[in-house]
Length: 196
Ligand code: TYD
Image (cartoon, rainbow, N blue to C red; front, side, top):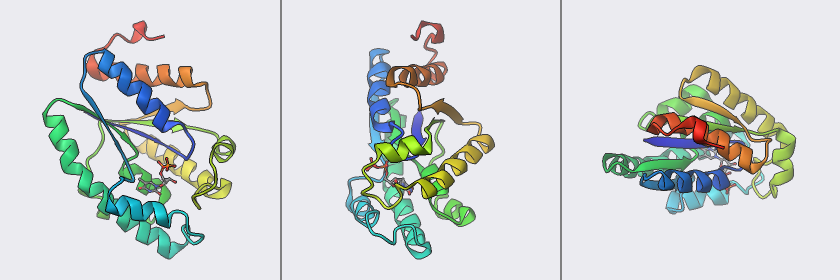
């Protein structure tokens, strides 16, 4: 099973991944987490480029699109291997991030055609104003105008893809966590009514 958390910057993905992992493990499952961009060579280059003032320019966005796709490809074998061993893979972001942060969409789809489709995408939907407040502004993407477009792109994707579940990330951490568990429970035949 390949479960992905998506959302605009500051939506709380990493905290929620930690809670979800713990809860699945308490339910007897083996769980591994992965993060995009990775901490490997290409991922490190991406993080450096994200701080450049021209990161949202057309050329740099295309360069980043290619780098994100290359960085992601390295993870695909790892995901398949873990899944074949019965391990649940929870990922912080996926090719859907490229579809909403980079463009043009058709080209992004093409260069990501070897990316695995997640079984479940939990879209942590946060108000853009809250997102900007929570971010430190290091990355060029962390501004209201850009993130408003990204949020809209996410919401359109969620309408086109059955594997998406929207989670209201404006709520407190505990409520977000229980909403996530309720969305995940049916995948593993865990009792939904037992979740607080
Ligand atoms: P993020 O998960 O926000 O990392 P951090 O915890 O360091 O803030 O990811 C870094 C940024 O990269 C974020 O602004 C989203 C962006 N991104 C893309 O633009 N395209 C992609 O394909 C991915 C995976 C991330």
